[in-house]
Each structure stands twice: as structure tokens, then as C-alpha cells.
Image (cartoon, rainbow, N blue to C red):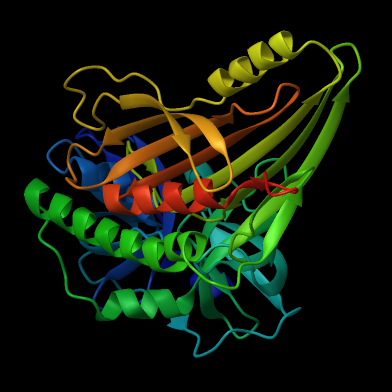
Amino acid sequence: MERARDSVFTVEVHSGSSDARDVLGSGYLVSDTGLVVTNYHVVGSYIDDPKRYQLRVRNGQGVHAARLLRFDLINDLALLEIAPIAVRPLTLAQRDPERGSSIVSLGNPEGLGLSLIEGVFNGYAEKGFVDRQLLSMPLNSGMSGGPIMNRAGEVIGTNVSVIWRANSLSFGVPVAKVKALLAAPSVSTDAASLRADVSRQLAALEHETRARVVEKLSHGDAVATVAVGELSLRRPPALFDCWNTSHVYEDEGVTKRHYGCNLQFTPRVEKIGEVGSVELGIEELTSRGNAYGFYGALGTQAEHSHRIKAQEPNNGILSAPHCEVERIRTRYMAFKVNTCLSAYVKHPGLFNGELIATTVSRPRHGAVLTLRASGITLDSFLALTRGVLGDVRWGDGQ
């Protein structure tokens, strides 16, 4: 892999001076015309504010000014261009290696120099609807955007992320996504054009979320269900990562059962955070004690579930949340429902939404349902809440 040394770069987002380095990542050369691949999240601050930041890359031959050509926020990729240099570009593989094959990841962690990590290609993660290669290797901070190579020295993917607290579990973006980015049209790099392209990609992501998540949770005749204690609800699509937990609080005389689901590998947009994210949780609580105290605890549990927070006025990112509290009766249940929405200031029509619903019909037996979605339209959020709320029921149907 020594021949790839000068083809791997440190990618820097800086605010003007020669020593300023606001963000560091990695990248790699893919053409003799100076095309460099990196991650969207490495250059996201530049995309958000191109007047404030500049791009440059470094390799063994020196420092090179770079400009953004295009980006793919859903797959976390960006394409830069530098002046042609006398370095051989890396070759993109035609296919994935076999599962279990040896691979090597390269990058410049913290700008300290080329780092090479050996690992194993384990195919693709099964959850979420963003394709991620599953890698047995301990990627280091700052290697984001570097190449993942097979034994023939061809690029099979791009470093993208790790799981916090996991010793050797990392993820890559498949090389097919790089090829698609190379074939895409370039974007103008003025602030208005970049914002418009972010909006376009967010709209495409929302459309995907609507088709593969919202429609599945809100429609269908033959419905598979999952039980949470005595509760029954529609089983989320297989793209979700779901888990069950339970705990008995002996002193309080309360038994709590929790079922939670979320989407893995959801994209993140600079300053906004996760987009295309849907989280579902339901807690069933049973009390052996006083009903009044139990419903006080149930209300406290609902209050602690809130994540949408107040926003500074004119922050330019998210609007102040608009919240409403109401009582709703579905075919099967009665709920006290608290719903909050925050609008995306720069991307009209998209919201972060949160619903927290508490049952109000049984004296010592209740549930708290939480539903959160980000980067979603109001119509999709309403369809999602109607579908999820309308399907929850007690096992006896009452």
C-alpha cells in the first residue's frame, strides 16, 4: 500500500489563515485531473457557510487548494477538485470483495500522518435504508473520507463512521455510491446554490422515508403485530433496529416494559443534526399500589421523554417548537397527546416532530408512546402519528 501514500490526503476546512484548521478529515485521489473523494460530514461546515470557510488538502507533496464540485449528504460523500498533480489516482473496484475478505483502510487521523488499518469485509449492515459496509476494523478519528481497499489495491469503499465504545466495528460507504457521485452534475458553490441543493437532497430523503417507513407504519390490511406486556402494536418494518427491555421497581411496586425502534445510519446535516430519522418507543407500566400515585408517575415519565427543546429566536436553524396538548380517542384507546413541531428555517416544508401519548383509561395500568421524526413533512408526520396511535391496543381489545 506504500504506492497509495501520496494519493491519500488530509482534508482541511479552515477559516482563512495558513494555520487555521477548523475540521480535519481524509480523502483520496480518483482521477489524474485532480478529483478527490471525501465525506460530506468532513466538509459540511463549508457547505453550510462557504463565505466563512475554505477547503484545502495536504499530502506528501504539499498543500493544495481545493474546491467543492458536488456532494451526496444521504450517502455522506463529497467530491473536491484540486489542480492536477503528479500522483497516480487510486483505482475503483468493479465489485465488492467476498464476505470475509481481507481489506485495508487508509487515512490521516488528526493530520498526524498516513495510518493503515487491516480488517475484514463483512458484507452490509442489515438495518436502515442507507447502504453501509460492515467492517471489522478499528477506524480512528480523522480517518473519515479515506479509502477502503481490497487485496488488489482497489478502492471498495470510503471510511465513514464507527460505533461509539465498539473496539473494532466500523462502517464504509460502498464504491458504487462514489461512482454515482462522479457521474452527477456539479453544483455552484455560492451559499444560495448550496442551500438549494441541500434542500433538494433532503426532499429526496423525505420521499424515501415516506415510501419505506411512513407508508409501512400507517397502511396495510394484513398487519403483523408485536406484544409489549398486555399491549399490541403494529410491527415496524424490518429496516428498524428494535429491542425489548423490562424492569421491576420493587420499592414503587411498578413493573415497566419497554419496546423501542430506530433507523440506523440516518444522515446528519451540519447544525441541524439527524435527518430522515424515525424513532418509536412504547413503555407499558403496571402498578400494584395507589392509582393516583401511579398516574402521577406516568405523567412524570411522559415529561421526561421530551427531547424537542426551546430555541433561541432568530437562530436561523430551527423555529421555536409549536406544541399542542389534546385528548384523542382511537378505535381502541384513549390518549392524552402532546405534539411538538420545529420547522427547518433554511429548508421550508420540513420539520422535526415529536409525539408523546399517555393512556388515560385504566387506573393501575398505562402506557407512554413516543414517536419522533426528523426532516419530515407535516403531511408525513400526521400520517405517521395517525397510523401508530390508531393501531395500539390492549391485548383484550379494550
